[in-house]
Length: 167
Length: 265
Image 1 (cartoon, rainbow over the protein chains, first blue to last red):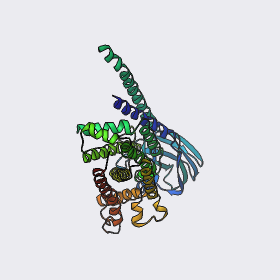
Image 2 (image 1 turned 120 degrees about the vertical axis):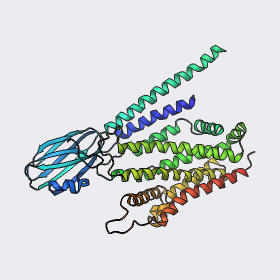
Image 3 (image 1 turned 120 degrees about the horizontal axis):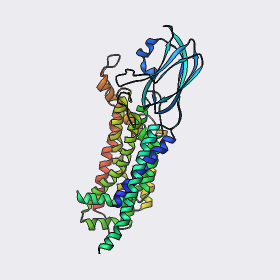
Image 4 (image 1 turned 60 degrees about the horizontal axis):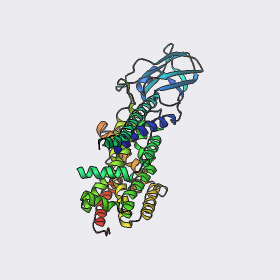
């Protein structure tokens, strides 16, 4: 029984560790230096425009853009095919777009020109704050671990009394 | 099996007194999981360098847990009490104790590995979203886990033999820490060739990196861009693996021989 309490306590500590790690997650940024982009670039070198984002808020700050364009953020699936965009907005020369990332994974950042011209663009993808999925998973383990520990501790305390009554 | 479970329970309850293991688990998870990456390829780096990032806490966990079980157990007469109450031979007791400690250490690391896996895969994954760039990250994770287990064989056996040879808690722990901490910082002398694979931490990173690189190209791109076959794993890689696994097993056998001839009165 005491062993079960230790195991339940380890579940609690695991949850606590995940929450602490989530809160301590450092801010991350990726800079895309001034690049001449054609629509073909995204299919030729998709890895250059893909970013690993965790659930929470993220931002893209455009520091240079030679013509108006649409900024599109698309989730990538396992076959490197893009899904429905989570961001689809018009951006100008200097802009900041803040958006919410629903799931942890790879997202493609694309700039689509109004006509088929080559874009000269420079931007920074930035993300800070605790990853929400880690917070939820950690909280879940913390709650389960706490409940189990309390239940087992209470059962353990009641046990000697009941055996005394029986004797 | 039943006696093994009793030794395991005894070790977990008495050698790892609350809250030692809980604090160590918290620190390991905190160090391992509080990192993130935004560029593709970062996940591979997180997996291959995980053991390197955690090496000091692993060394301390195994050192204190092992010395508490063997040296302090001998000093306090707990080893003899366990052997007589469970009616175990000396060699029977030693392998059960070694395996009990190994399982406790390994489960701490496996919990952390699972968390790191979900940090890449997603704690609540969306099946339509690519969480891994190709399969390189996953392959690195697959190599990292057995490599960590091999490292634990080495450290667990090292602490066993030192404890049984010196039989003094302070001396055993001191020599263990001197050996392992020097082993961790070996790269300050040389970070090339065989020495880098023997190094604790950085060597583990090298082994995982070399193996995952090699097998990834062997599995998915057997011919590189200039049409040459993927090069074989180097000798230093094998030396690093043998040092950990065979070295650990030799030390375990030597510890068993030492324990067999030991005066326990």
